[in-house]
Amino acid sequence: MLSSGERYRLALARLLSIRRPIMLLDETTYHLDAKNEELVAQVIHANSPEQTIVMAAQRIKSIASSK
Image (tube, rainbow, N blue to C red; front, side, top):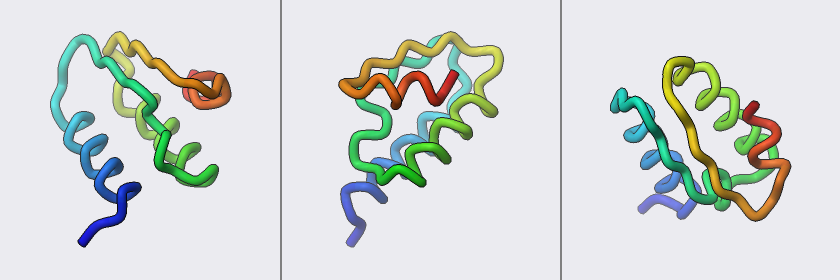
């Protein structure tokens, strides 16, 4: 049994493992605490330099921290 945050991180890992030119992310860090939110933002930024990323979020910090 996985928690909702663990399931979400697994889904993000699967998404990041598929190299697509455009990535659409909706509420990317919704189920995550502040520490894991920052880690996910760093991973998205580091692993997708040649991708166009479109992010939707209710909290501006979620998007701003992933530059």
